[in-house]
Amino acid sequence: MFTHLARQCTRFYSTTVPEGLSAGESTIYKKLSTEFDPIRLRVADISGGCGSMYAIDIASKAFEGKSIIKQHRLVNDLLKSEIKDMHGLQLRTSSK
Image (tube, rainbow, N blue to C red; front, side):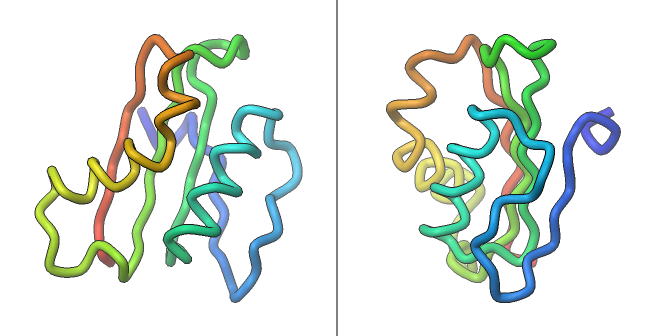
């Protein structure tokens, strides 16, 4: 289900936000992209467009050697101001 909802973008040494993302998706994408230099990053508003729930799938070398809980904490800490306005967040992290 997540794969069908998420807008996928593979980064090739660029911090350019992919076209077609909503304002909320773009904000989250930029923050994650800048902080974690991801290998893979998908951000999708899965609330039907109102911005109350997002799905994030991120892979970054910054997560190597860290438990899933620590990886999620890093993302949650970065997105703290955005998360306070959300009803929910689906988060998938990995180092590969």
